[in-house]
Amino acid sequence: MKYNVLVLGSGGREHALCWKLAQSTLMGELHCIPGNAGIQGIAHIHSQPDILDFPSLEAFCVQNSIHLIVVGKELPLVHGIKDFFADTKILVFGPSKHAAMLEGSKIYTKNLLAKYNIPTASYHTFFNTDDALYHLESITKYPLVIKADGLAQGKGVDIVNNKEEAVASILDMMEHKKFQQAGEKIIVEDFLEGKELSYQVIVNHDQYFECIPTQDYKKAYDHNQGPNTGGMGNIAPAEWVTEEIQYNIHRQVVEPFMKALQTENNPYSGILFIGLMVNTNNQPTVLEMNVRFGDPESQVLLPLLESDLLALMIDIAQNKKLPESYRLDWKKNVSATCVVLTSKGYPDQYQTGYPIDGLDTLAKMDDCVCFHAGTKKIEKEILTTGGRVLNIVALGKNLQESTKKAYELIDLVSFEGKTYRNDIGE
Ligand code: AMP
Ligand code: GLY
Image 1 (cartoon, rainbow, N blue to C red):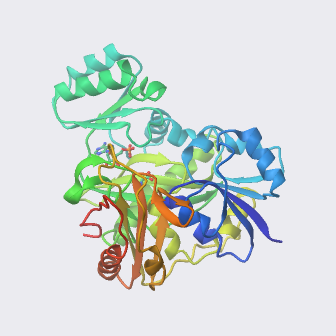
Image 2: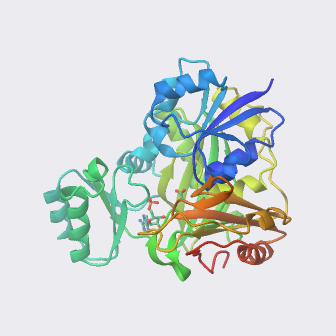
């Protein structure tokens, strides 16, 4: 049987998902809502319906004989897309609304981690401004981390360096409603030092498969300066992650967390993204959980995955137990580097609508792939439409080689205001 698949989303992650899924022998017709110019080259893209309008989405699926929905971004999952389609014949790859609280509520996740003694930064939760401000009186050490409980488009975390900044952050979130309802409840937690890691696990209830570790470059400017972004680049595998670190992550975080979900009767299926800080003693601490693949983590992970992702997603969406011997198969001795090209000014104000040149030349190069993010095809031209525009991904026999290649390839494409970090892979 062939499966018609609908991918939801429009970023580099969704282009990487479409690219990988399209390679499966099980693939029938591939659709994407809303997609981008890169996805348009391999799938049917549609601007409607809205991906949160589930009844209209169901009508779309019936009309296009969709068998499986693959959700790229968190919002449809947090809004309960899995639960909505549970009574239909259409499969959804991803967790239920209840399980998606792992990303939808940071307080829910922190409490769960604490209950099961899984390492995470010490924290306090606050439901009103006065209590949060009063708590600052007892703080003797900065920096301090202040987090909005709900979804805030990746912007809900403030690292503050003194009491004045802490007060401003709390007032912004709780009084001035900077993130609307998402900031009505907050977490104040200890600042952790170390190296950050993105660790993604493909979960099928009590079975789970750990992906190779990847490293995100979140800050806008070189040497981790400037504001946080969705991610300016990524590498896989993160070579500094030794066997000892990986063992510690498995034993101290993944294994107990999977057991905790069982004990809590909160069955999980889909991708679990664990953001970790690893300290100088090789000990991991959980920073956050997300219920979908990372972006740009997917852009380096999926080109290194040999296994048939569509076959795996279908089995998991059908709640099928996988054979005990099932393992994810990764390309051996190959590294991937992704450099994100952004519009000048991202993550703050930026201009869009500029034509992109050089994509055809780039497409002819070996051992690389260009995943689109904020792009749109208008007649014959491809224009910029977002902050993150393109993801240039190069493969090599090690990180040094893939990184060198990624930076050579960047010169082949041009658009007004093209901006990127120079130190991805360092
Ligand atoms: P989160 O959305 O919780 O992952 O936070 C966004 C970013 O803020 C993380 O990727 C880290 O760079 C930073 N961050 C979050 N929590 C902490 C912490 N406790 N200590 C240091 N940095 C943090
Ligand atoms: N790159 C981080 C994320 O997708 O959450």
